[in-house]
Length: 564
Image 1 (cartoon, rainbow, N blue to C red):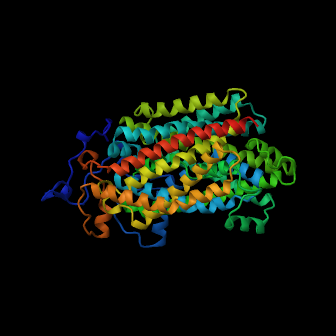
Image 2 (cartoon, one colour):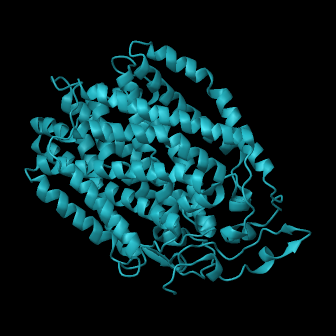
Image 3 (cartoon, rainbow, N blue to C red):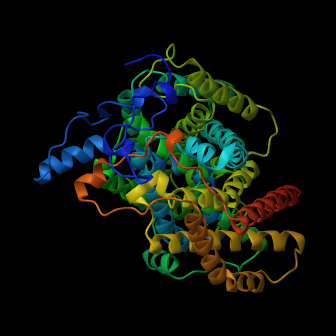
């Protein structure tokens, strides 16, 4: 394996019919992969097994399929459990302490959102062999790419800060100084990641995931009210009525459950694990399992926080996650300790995944080696970027007097506001025949994804309106904005189809399952450039302006809440 990064000119020539032309048309067969780092080629090495790069055997028995799933499993579960990070624990706990379990319905609705978004990046990672940031930059140009990747860098850094806030709060509950716990956690995170072995890193992540199973006994120790929980899961409502603060929290729940960093992390982690189209079905299963795990964990935290504050003066007055642990200690010292351990564990998993997501994107954007298969000496810029982000984020948390609870909620809400932008670029990539060929989105999936984007925009629009006009009727605003949802979804699908039509791509020929499984995206330099219609370009610019305004008003709302 070469030590140099794989540049376009260093890659092996495109082979077979993929390099041939017939009247100017390229045939969709298996070209050389478009990997950026040669370390992304080779055997699949997972925490629970290895699959040889040349393994093309069929899995006929259940035992063979389970062993294959065990080797593949990882990117989907890690990204989902990492989603229940410090910000997630804090946000779900705030929902439980301030609104009982009345917001459980948001979690049920987010399951299809999680699966739809992450399934698209599963295909992108396995088929292209290229990270999300790299694809955006190459297909849409550096200007548009930096719109998306720039958001990621800023949001991810703020999210890493919230992870260390979680570590600090968990340490404070245990009576350990933050000035000791935070630096030690930072050193451990770097050591785990820079081991030079993808399998070792993944095993470490699964060890932390095993600790998160404590959420199950935590749930049962909280004396769940089964009838109320069941009703709140299926009947939308908000305890005390819909207010601007409730809308902000709902957006935060969306942002912490379906965060933009997840798109970048899972795609790059799939590439780094060397998963190919042949194993897409297993990685889809990994993703679905992870989405169910994240919702169960979120529900357990919400129910536990409700139990902690129910019937006390603390109800409706959330401060931070450590406050919830202290409330639980009044019921049971064991329950308070379990909650603190869950918070600490979630912070470590989240910090690792979110920081790694940023370092993967850093490697994509700047064309450097970025693989966990490489040691520190062999990929210094990659690991130094990781170390620098961890160190700076840890340092910020140690500043005395910072409003940690408010920062955490604001960052999760920011993730929810920026998700539509990330989802639009994801949708465009998944309809790019040059990139995905026979793996492009089906029409029904485009319609569902467009509807999801529309719902997110309605929520952010409601937050904007209630921030500008604090006494406005929130229900009326939400209803009026929702009326335009159907039309907006249809326009989004039409824009994608128009953009696809404007690209001079050849029709995708019929192919066998074996041919489809062997199809990989050619090197990026060989792809026809993207041509955007004026309408689509205007739509993206309008979305960008709208989201910038949303972010500004979010800051205003955060300042308003911080003054109370």
